[in-house]
Image 1 (cartoon, rainbow, N blue to C red):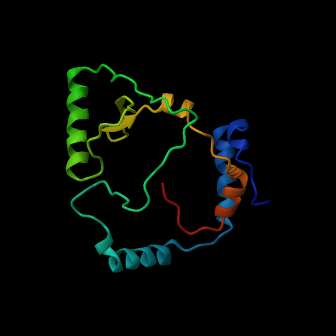
Image 2 (cartoon, one colour):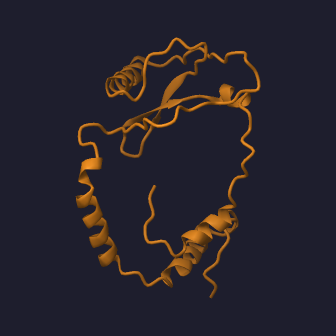
Length: 162
């Protein structure tokens, strides 16, 4: 049986049949998990100093992020109304992000409302609703990679991350 399968099938086949295709496509690799785990453990121990033990969020201090817009008219949306318990969660997360330097105060004419999304573990993730900003953002002319090509390229991969 071919190890190539189409991601398109994930929408056309019953879930169990699609899962079987994925298993068939990946089981030919005969990779022993033990050496992979030992190798990964060794790398994690060798580079333990790059992981911040005090802060759950990292930040990139490289290039400044720029968004190209179709118009110079600032997009500013009012904050969403939230019940007190959700406002408390939002305020706490904003305080933490300010304290660890992930965000900073701004007097920009642009603004988007925030809310939270429930995570699998029952905690809340702070999210920003940038839909209005997206409407005036210049489209990136770089084509999106083909998902089937990406999946095919990962068939022989040894590590997968979220």
